[in-house]
Image 1 (cartoon, rainbow, N blue to C red):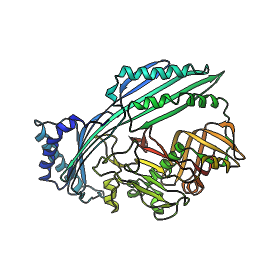
Image 2: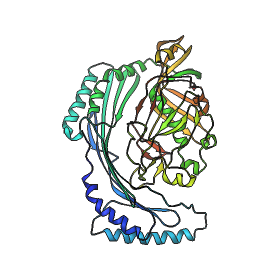
Image 3: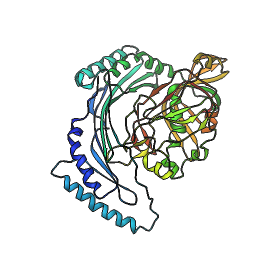
Image 4: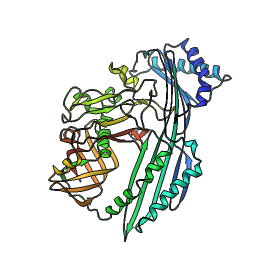
Length: 476
């Protein structure tokens, strides 16, 4: 079913065009991004039920204006015919003060050329199987309670079982002198969390679900109840891994974590401008096994960060970051592209209309290979299949990576032993990890639950993934 565009934004469109026209009389570049995002998050567990508005909800506008030196931005959330001139006058006043400060500044000020835009008028409306409005909140909660009750009846070891469902409807409009863009789509994410206890030993396991989907995600979650409970029960017998270097097979989820942390943040090109990314020294050079190709882009896949245009009005692309082991390029917002003399890749994303746009990942993933998982397991003398993302960290300046992983399933002499280690910390130097990749499976999977921060803040939705990959890493 087609997703509908925000009536609020469509009603504001004539006024937004007026603002662009009025400001364009004085400034050579003017654009407006309008956002209307709404959603709900549902939580059901043994201890109760919770329903609240999504933390991604927002409604407002951001104006970007070239002030003659660089760019100024103004955000607001109320606009109508009565306050139209007030907003324009206030921008003129603030621009005058800004220019005065820039001209009298005692430090070097970054300058930016005018953004050049082609004439584009385009709309994107997403599709889902079941619109959120098709079911009431009560009906959604009843489906989730049924999942919880089924889980609790599965094993006496369960202490609790949590079901989370989160639906978000995103509508955005972008208007400038040359562009008129609209998009509206729905994404959803969900979690199953199983908590089990035996004597004094308590463990948990989780499974995440996500995509450009809506209520149909709840049915997808229902089909995975037993799997997540079985995983949590196995973890009761898990032991610690003996620290050392191992051959491992990373699940698509862990492959995505590596792609995200190793060469996602590391190739965000605003870090090139600030000279905080080691990867800029390796453009055109080998950084991975020849088997490795990595993509990023809103148009590269259909998942949580797939859109027609980014928050600067740049159409989404499919960027090949690594091709057959060679680092080809990075991902950029408009301003970093202007500074570096490159073409923006449609990766300018804002946490909200009140926040700055940064170069951010979208759908980041390794492409498939030609190996089967069975052959990959058979090739390992002693190692582990790693699965279950807990957290990840990277250092773009020095290319270190650290991934916290829920579990490792032991492999000995080409066979799974049934033994589990947990938790597992995987570390390494990015080129060493990627150059050690020797096998990739035939199917790619992406996931996009959770969020990605820029440093410790500026959260946005992304997705990442890949095939199963065999590599050599340090575990501890």
